[in-house]
Length: 606
Image (cartoon, rainbow, N blue to C red; front, side, top):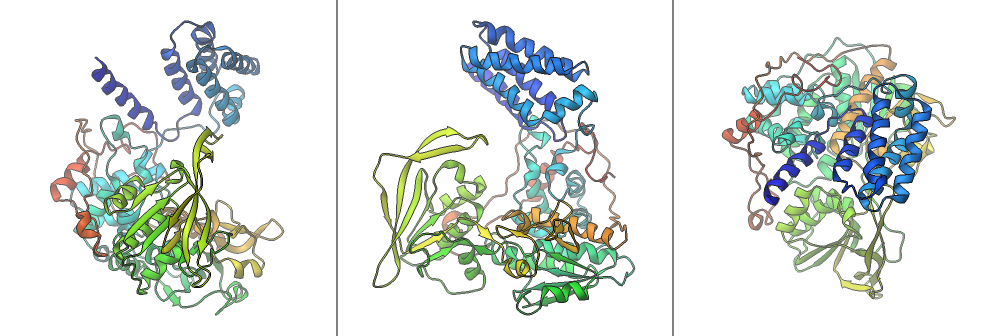
């Protein structure tokens, strides 16, 4: 009985996980409240009867029969239940509704005053909505299923000109709400993208035809994913894009921050060369704004300006001995390796502070440089923000992890000037904060001394924004201030004329797909600013949807080379899917663009 019940509960859990984006939050909270009501043992009146009354009031609001009086009554009843219920079922359920009333106050008022959701909420296709660039995911999966590789690549390029790079390094947020979870597991969307580019080199997929030339010229500062995406779309619209980058080669953090074993640079070059063929794009590498050219020159000589400078400078800690020669930020360490600097860690004890994806890249890179031991320390489990697959792969390659250790200071040898050990304070877990994250406090245990030969700090990155701040652009804590349309704010608070910015230099360190999305948004808004309303045409026809395959089927995973083999070199770690795996995985797609959802984002239907 218990085993059968656990199966049923797990299926219910996956249904909660796959709640679609665009759903009315009040409907969601009502369903969670009903679930809490079912958990009540019925012994205490506040939980047994009170939750039922709260649910009745919430249902009235959703039916359009609500009033401020009903809302006030619901609030006071929830407070009473939270204070008087005998157990956690009533307390947590009542507090959950109170939280919803604070977090979605505008939704409650809209349902009471307008008898509708704030923005006429409609369920959208989960994978398309969750993708920051809003790529037509069901469409390209359907094309993969029909072996139309070039069309699949070009449908991806309709929103994202980096199909190959994203196929290898994207964090695939598109899978987080996949409706296939209701049946078994999410579609391996990144895996299918990689399956497509494994079958056909992206250079061989013919690009859309560029619009007639407009005579407009846009300067783009930064040749990373955001800047190159902006250049790609502007070139297709008919504008001239001139890209300035301080490095010798294009790619930004895709080239200098992501290791070769995850993203082979020849594969990155496939995407970059395709982008450069899109239209009138001029490249000026080895050129840094503030050193080789001034911002005022760009503003004077170009019709618009886009700043996509990324966040490539690794942070150091403001503590003694953080400037020792063998203490290095993770981002700087990865850039040194990417630029071909010879680093031999044979016999060295490496310590890494931090648990993000950049930290995992640094730890796995150190393993390939023959480090004797690699230890990753974090303060709490919440600090392990890297993808679970990256953490698992690092463990397989010999990286060791310890949490609940707070970093105190660095011990250095006075004669050599080198860091010799780190001091760590054991922690104990405390209450969760308002964001649902664990808090910690110092344990009564004594501080912990750990010897090291190399200390890597994976504690974040920042932008090289000093030149832009000196030129009068608004910069706050190293980030350029820009709105959702990527337009930079002026020093007086008004929008700066013709200056746009996006990606990591605005948001802080994020993912490649977020930077790509910012470049896409900026390109369309620059086009509007210049007085146009171009559309980049995608001539790909998406196959019609077939009846859903609802037979529970295992998810095809991207396998990696044996850990003991792959840790010895920087060769690509992932093994291509077989045709059988790829087609079977594509057949699991439920085609939510046709079935079960209200709308596609951005009008990307057939």
